[in-house]
Image (cartoon, each protein chain N blue to C red):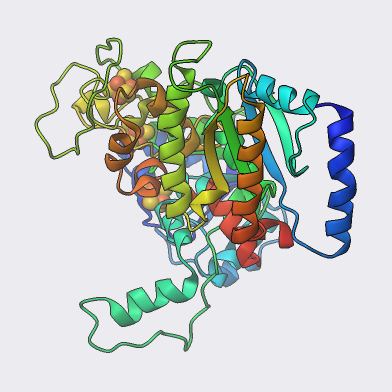
Amino acid sequence: MAKRIALAQLSSCWGCDQSLVDLHLGLLDVLPKLDIVFWPTVVDYKLADLEALPNRSVHIGMVEGSCRTKEDLHLLKVMREKCKTLVAWGSCSIFGGVQGLANQWDLKELLERKFIQAETVTDPRIPDENMPGFTEHITPNPQIVECDVLLPGCPPTSENTLDALTALLTNKPFDLPTKTVCDQCPMERKEKHIKKFKRNYEGNIEAGKCILDQGYLCLGFATMGLCGAQCPSVTTPCKGCFGPTPIMSDHGAKIISALGAVAEMEPEELKGSFPDPIGSFYFTDYAASYLSKMRGKERGQEH
Amino acid sequence: MTAASQQITKSSKAKRKAKGEFEPRIVAFCCNWCSYAGADLAGTSRMQMPPNARIIRVNCTGRINVSFILDALHQGADGVLISGCHPGDCHYTSGNLKMQGRFTLLRHLVKEAGLHPDRVHLQWASAAEGDVFTQGITAMVERIKKIGPNKVKER
Ligand code: SF4
Ligand code: SF4
Ligand code: SF4
């Protein structure tokens, strides 16, 4: 019997969906086993269609994106009610995503920056009519509702999503690895003596050799190894988009701890290498960090 | 620290608390070889210091995972003090210097996140410097009193 599945999009880039669709003919392996009951990205479903379903009548719910609007929050809660197994799908869903970086500022500042002060704005006004309203703070979905399965990545690779779906369809567990991107990476490593950190546009990264050893911030050591080290394999530093491994409590803390050990630099010089530490160390998971949670508590985090 | 030195300060703390003054809660990570020994010396020498610090002994400041510090703030500590051996004196050669690099990045991060960077502080105090240690604690308490309580706690 086919399992009923709902796929919902909160505030996000829909890249996780894109990654799923990128399976192309591989989709044929899973689609016959799935009965799609809600997937507005692809089929014209409305929120009311989902709301009309009996509670816990959907086997698998995939939630992509995080709650930037009150409508997102509502949709997340409805998904939780309707689905037996809820999957936090992608780094937006698990950690808050890139939009979690906005937690550095209060909502008022964000709205003014975007709708009033932005250089290209010709009709400055903050939209408030026929709008669901914004949330004050990005809170990772697993802190709002219980999520049964976590599938990180920005986006998770097509194979990651296929693996998770296959596990769910065959009632197998889908556990996250404690290994890191470095553990999956084919680059040749040496003992680290980093005397200077370069920005990615400075000089050329040499192929075949560890990118961090060459003085570029490659976050493979602090990042969950699930993508197959796809960025360093093509000579591009890992930005840490899969977030920390389940045994690390805070991505930035792990990164700072490691940098202190491998950088042979004066402290001030080390600091000067990272003008935007939040952006560099928490690309997709700032909302899940201790510091952001502290701001969230200050803001009262109502949802 | 001896119970006696704690005793003296506790009664004065009770008095200040009764007046409704803000009493910062400070978590102090002290390395076993220098600062913890320094704190011990301060206690046995009956030096006076405010009772606001909860001391956590670690083998080396180089062993302190940055997440311990952030977690302490997240759980409501008003300030976190890290006290280690003077540069060059580390029992494990360079753990304190690693901490110094980490600390500089951490302070930068804390500031970028909108918290007062003085909520975290790094000091050096040797096993013989009970006085330096107590002055460090006193100065930390004064700094945090100026900044005010950690807002996480108020909710
Ligand atoms: S996790 Fe990344 S790819 Fe997926 S929706 Fe969010 S921003 Fe897009
Ligand atoms: S730091 Fe980057 S390049 Fe080096 S081994 Fe790890 S993932 Fe590969
Ligand atoms: S290598 Fe790093 S940045 Fe690239 S996909 Fe993997 S986790 Fe993300």
